[in-house]
Length: 60
Image (cartoon, rainbow, N blue to C red; front, top):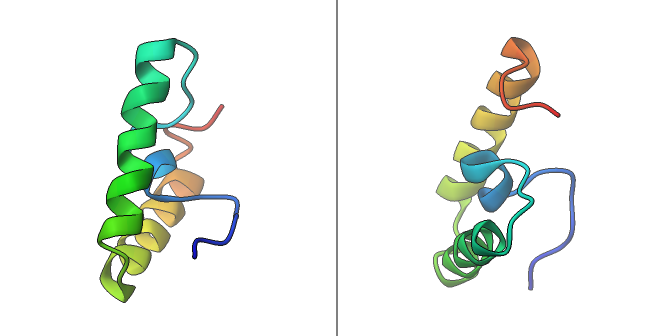
């Protein structure tokens, strides 16, 4: 249902994670995206991704 890509709901909301508890939180974002799949969420992801690219904040 969800195709892989360079960004996603979990990535724009949490960014890079290293700890186990952070991975669980990121997985919750992924499940939220799957449950609430819509064009609106995709547009928000696109907008937030552009902001990160322009500002460089959140990039690793």
